[in-house]
Length: 180
Length: 170
Image (cartoon, rainbow over all chains, first blue to last red; front, side, top):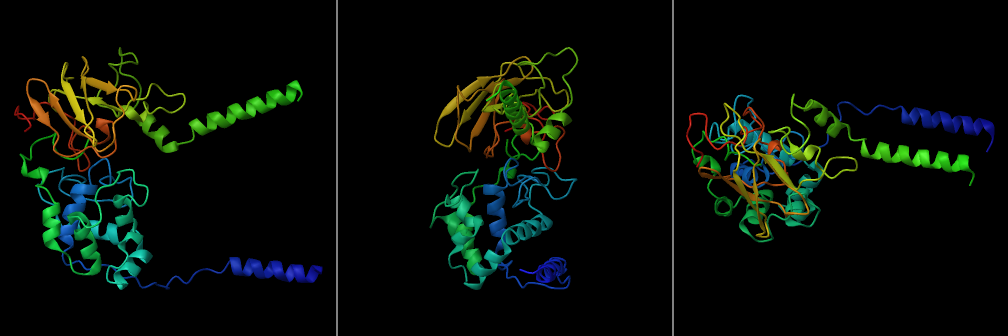
């Protein structure tokens, strides 16, 4: 290749490499409904949001809730003894923002193939998960989460999957709240 | 290979090993944040009560002996005196159980050779009374990963046998 062609090629590469992305460009993403999400949030808080798992600011899929990490700096685990609206909102953002492209695909298909989401694949044991296998296909936890992804939350399954909150116990306990 | 080449190779290998075991700045910063030993307390079973034991006792090359589960039980969140002689009873997800007894500092520790549990775990502590942790331990074998003093938005406070008001946890 001649020197002028090499020069032109290099110049084109530099130009292409230096093009800035359009700051106003957006990508449309779909997210599951917020209807019924408080049931999902409550379940996620209990099953996933202990302070040594997803109830920590250092880990992705950050989960807030009354039993673990609190969103308000003035709150403590089980004080107050209910999950706040702000915490449910943060949990929603955390879950739908984990894998937005995959979430969009799942929502667009009305919940078909939910296992493509790490949200489902990891606790099912399909993907490696430090927290281990937490539920199986067809059980109440699985049904709760996947029905929400399909657009119609099976609240009965969510309620069945959720044991009594540990915060129903005396809230002053400094030992029983949260995880290890 | 000449003696010089062997020396250079060995030095490079040693440097690589040293770099490999010391290259996690997050852990290094966390360890540094714990500060030094308390005056008059030697490194050993009584040191650093209430700190996240597995931060150092993690089995990494060059670190102190590994623990699978370790922590500190205090009397109450005000005095923060170690609860001596408390029995910490743990059960892992497979039903395997193990008990450890706290020492004069309130510390207990279990090595992987003694018990290598599969998480999640449940735990209860017995001293004058028995208190049972209502939630599971999901993945951390160090109590103080979560039970940090004082209580905050991200911590229920240290593990205590009594509440601030002198009451007993359920």
